[in-house]
Length: 320
Image (cartoon, rainbow, N blue to C red; front, top):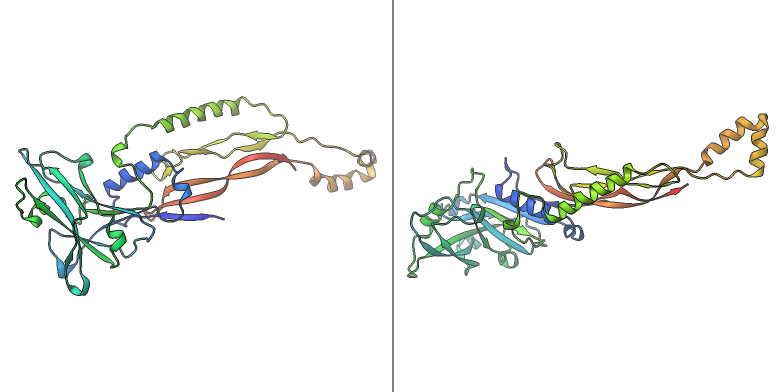
C-alpha cells in the first residue's frame, strides 16, 4: 500500500527564500527521521490582509488549514535596515485575537534582545510562537511586536516594526509563519557543501559500482544497480534521497531433466508438443523480495510530498 504524506507551503509565485533553507535542512538531515512519521511534516503560511484591523505594523495569517499534529511554530521576519551605531532593543511578540470583533492581545510568546547594528543569521529574526498551537481555535491569527529600549521605556511599536522588517506582501521576503511536526536543529547548520553522510554515501556508491562492474555472469544472484536522482531534471525536485539501489536479478538457473522428458525429447513426433509444454517450466532468475524507498520531492503544485514507494529495490533473487 502506498502511503502519501504532504509537506505544504503556500502557492505564491516563488518559493520563499527561508523555506529553501528549511528544505535544505530536511535534505541534509535525511529522510531517516521523516520516514517514521505519518502525515504532514511542515506547513508554512504567508501574510494576509484583514481590512477591519488593517494596522500596517501588525501581521495576520490564515491558519484554517493548520494540522492538529503540529507541535512547534516560528514567526520569521526579514530584517530590512541596520542602525549606523551600536543600539540594542528588547522585543516581545504577542498574538492578536479578534473574538466577537474585539481585539485581544496575549502575554509575550517570545522575547529577544536585538542588536540593531548587526544583521541576524541569514538576515531573519525568528520568534518561537509555539504557544498558539495549543490555545488557538480561530482561523485568523495576528501578531504584534512590542519594543522597549535599554532604559525600559516604551517606543513606538508599529512604526519600529515597519522600519525594521520587510512587511510587503508582494516581496519574496515577506513574513512567514511556519509550523513543524518534526524537530529541526536550525537552518544555521545548513551549508553549501556535502555533509559527512553524503560523502560516506558517495564512497559506498563508488565501491558498490566497482563490485557490479566486476561481477561475471554465473548462477542466479543479485546484482547492484544504482539509480542517480541528482540529474539536471531531478536535482531541483527531489530533496531526498540523492539516489538508491534498484538492483537486478541475473544469472543461470539449473534445470533437471527427468527420464521421461529425455525419452520424449529423442522422439521427433513428440518434440514439438514437448517444446510447447515445457518452455514455460524453464526456471528463470527473478526477484524474490523487495524493499521500499522513501522519497521527499517537490510536486508540480509547489507542495513538498513524502511518499513510501513500494517495490523500488530488489533485495533477493530466486530461480522460479
